Image (cartoon, rainbow, N blue to C red; front, side, top):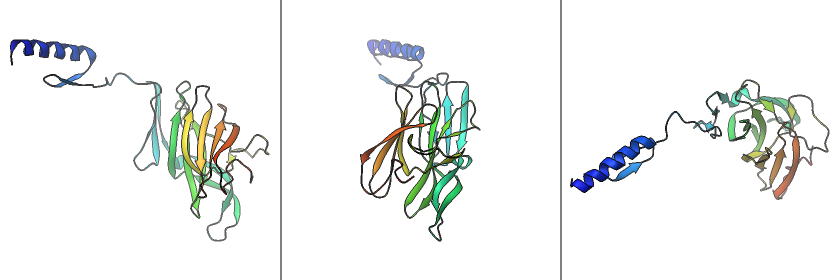
Length: 210
């Protein structure tokens, strides 16, 4: 290696050491994030089989949440044999999506609890990483409808996306087999703020049938 090339290599190596990077080859640097730095709004990691999620909120509070620990009473659940509906206690089986509020670190977790005739019956929970064993059910009831008993919800359908906006409102997109798609807005306290259709077909996704 010539003198000027050696000098350039030495400068790059020194800069890489100061910046926490790794020198991979002469004249080529790849970035390596320091393990001591953690983002306070890191997106939770869903397991490959989508039955659990690891939540990280800064360097203090973290949790591992399992879909099977998310349970609630769900209305109008059909019996697989007779088709008759009733309120049943259902358990999460599969995680659709998660989102974390970067300010409060509260995590929204949408889970499938039951599937019948290609229709998902889903639930939504808010989890505080500081108290992971106390998930809060979001009771899916429109503001103009009669409230439900504690730990009871009408079912959401297939949850397609979750996100918090800058004001802390949670946006929940869910859809059904007919092609209908709607966005449900959830207040920071877990109450339903409203619902609007993105696409409308036969599905009733904004609480009309409740």
